[in-house]
Image 1 (cartoon, rainbow, N blue to C red):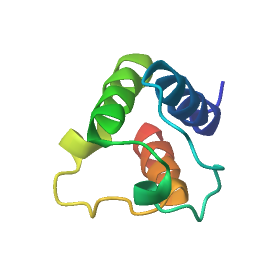
Image 2 (image 1 turned 45 degrees about the vertical axis):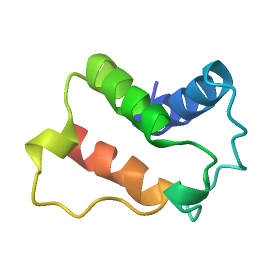
Image 3 (image 1 turned 60 degrees about the horizontal axis):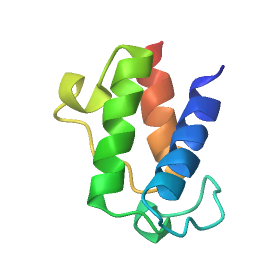
Image 4 (image 1 turned 135 degrees about the horizontal axis):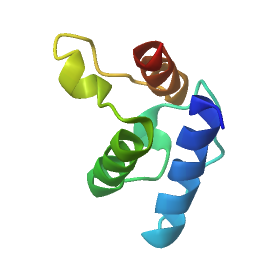
Length: 81
């Protein structure tokens, strides 16, 4: 499974588990407009760390925080390479 697919699956799974209404996912979608809260993002990042074996936020502390879903996905894709 690709990093992109894994991330999108986690967004959908966490939204469902937390009874959150997830907006339509696209690369241009601002993370603040996904319909998820900070707890949801913490769960997603934790699960991705377990699945991918790394946390790019810890490894790249000086990197700018992703603003859109596309930036979030690319952040993980670049970290995995």
